[in-house]
Length: 232
Picture 1 (cartoon, rainbow, N blue to C red):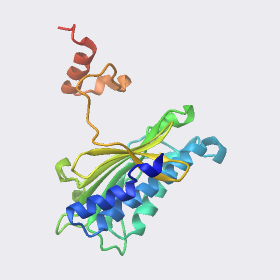
Picture 2: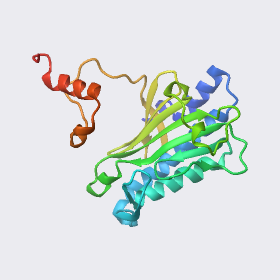
Picture 3: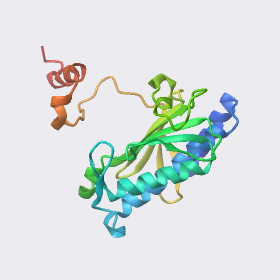
Picture 4: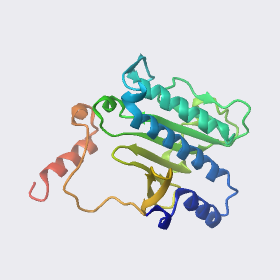
């Protein structure tokens, strides 16, 4: 039962108290949570809301955009601009950086609003990916250079999966935790605390159709997975 579990809101407040935060960062993640809930709703409605099919244009990667790509991008941009804590955003669906005009924010948001959208029409899971960075001193938030930071500079990162259930997986640099959306009450609750990659498993998943583009380390890793304990 959800009321016996820790909600995402309570989890973020606990982290805020533990780290002595001001609440700004909690607001950032709360806005992302709301965006993911809205996207989950639109994905679940699918054809009933006329959300399936192509949008008739390409994104910056040269991929054909789906209607839900465009809608999810608009949701992310709108909801995360409202709080005024972001100075700029970068999206896979936009060619240029999106500056948040009039905002005095000190954070940057990078996101893919709906990864795997080619799977939507066949009812396979899709998701959202995001990363939060601090705006470097002296850099214009509309400049691409402000976003080109090493991964260790992230202050938070995560993803949402929209499938048989909706999950939000999040890290703020102190472990990884997974929250499942309780559709009955509309809140994310902690269901997968302290997530880690298992030492042993019997399955792996990768897009083999792009194997010709794999880097040597990735190719070697997959070869080792396929060989198993009995391999060379």
